[in-house]
Every structure is written in structure tokens, then in C-alpha cells.
Length: 176
Image (cartoon, rainbow, N blue to C red; front, top):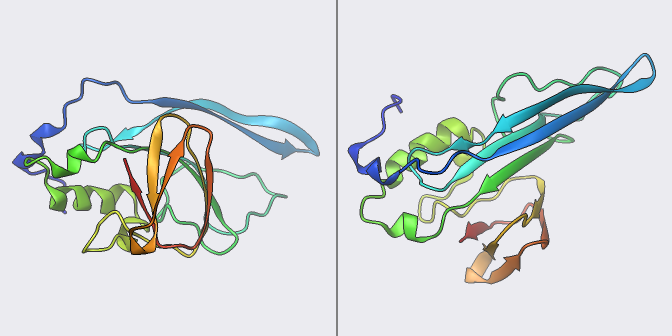
């Protein structure tokens, strides 16, 4: 993990501009609700996995003290919150063909994920890097397109735009 990406990652073509999301954060100042921030957030495009984008919109590592101003001014040590914490991510998953392409470098992709998805990538299984389990309740909304949720015993559920999944600490993978 020296920050270099192998020559095999040439399949990462940047012909598509990164997605952007507007994040509006409201808070309390002297008993009144106010806009704390209003900004555009650009998705992180994985160099090693074409079409894979990740945007960490917000994270509270633990139960927030709402009597104090909530801030998210630096990338956290872990994108997986602790007990009572929350996180919100926008993720774009690439098609499965990306991973079966002969030029795909799984080791480089894992190295990049360990840096960008700290605390989550540690849970990816060696036998099947997409499979993982965290001690969190996750809410997934299919915002656009379709994807398959895989659970134990290769049980898959096809999801389309508008579908919602509540994961209660389950072992799973996302397949596209």
C-alpha cells in the first residue's frame, strides 16, 4: 500500500465525470434551526475499479450529542460507525464484467479499498471480496438502475429503482 497503482489498472478510463451530490446540513444555534452548511460533494472514483464511485455524505462515529454542533470536516478513521453511530453513503457499483476483465487487478483494488473504505474493506472476505458483514444496521436505497443483493447460500434478490433493503448485521454482497 505505497500509494502506487499497478500497470494492470489501465482499464480505468476517466471518460465520465464524477457524480456530485448536494449536502445540506441543518443544526441548532441558540435554540433556532439554521443551515450549518450547504455544499456540493464530488464522488470518489476508484482508480482500480472503473465505474465504482463512493461518497461518504455523513458519519457520526458514535451516538451524537445534539446539544453540540455536529461536524464532518475530515475523513474518518472508519466509514463504519460504532455503537449508536450513523453513516450515509452514495455508492455506484460497476457491472460484474469489470471484475472478470483480464486487466482487472484485484490486489490493487483491495489496496485502494483499504485506504478509501477504512473500517469496511477490512471486513471483505478473501475468498469472495464482495462478501462482508459489519455489526451495523444498514439502509440501502436503489436510487437508479438495478442491482442484486446476495446473502448466504448464494441467495440473490433482484432490486430495482425505489427498492429499499434493511440489513441487520447480515453477511452480504452487492452484484451488478
